[in-house]
Image (cartoon, rainbow, N blue to C red; front, side):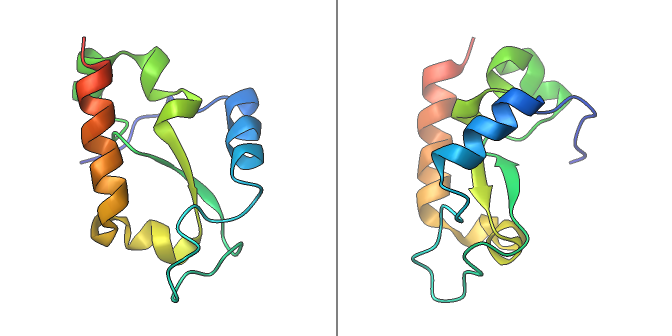
Length: 95
């Protein structure tokens, strides 16, 4: 799956960083890098297909963004609570 060019705008990015206090949302994992290499991850992936299902307004919203360090972002598929959060968002925001 490839990402799209459209993504979080500067205002939303700032809100997400502030929401998580510039710390990885998965910081309880002993392998987490805490605040190293932070990036914003789309909980529901930012794809053309998902844009049709959920709409760009939701995909690029603060609700669909989570702050992760580089280790956690690379291993996001193994983080069970993020999978649960994804399922909750899919139910709530599907058009």
